[in-house]
Amino acid sequence: MRSNNTWTFIVMFAILAPLTWTIWYYAGTTETLTVKVTNHHIKTIPTSDESIAPSQRYLIDVDILDEKGIKIGDETLENTDLYFGLKFNSSDYQRKMAIDSTRTVVVKGYRIPFFSMYRNIYNIKK
Image (cartoon, rainbow, N blue to C red; front, top):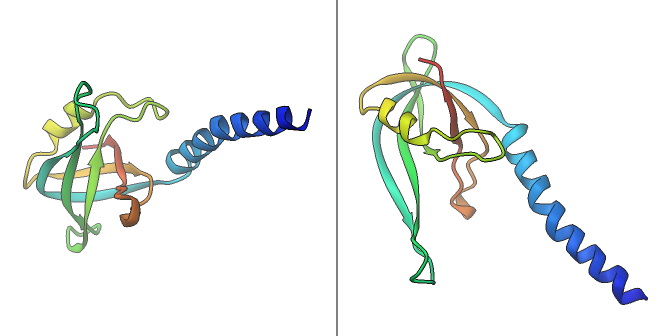
């Protein structure tokens, strides 16, 4: 009887932990930035199974600007679809983020270098 409860807990944890992480990561961390695009590239993540295509992430290097247009920092942002965030137009956003263009963007997430995680562009305002 006790082993059934253990397995129930493990299954529930396996389902709820990723869902909770996703909601915390994307829902609670929104910031609007004015940025100037300095570079963009594609990061390919290989898979161990040759029958599965490697995944790719758009990465965009930006200078963060203040309200006067003065550079106050730089950062690499990610531009990928957010299924839980209902964002499915990353390719369109990538085209809009031309090098040397200045945009106001809404980003979600955190920059966590240990996990190679970047803040994700959620919306482009101009």
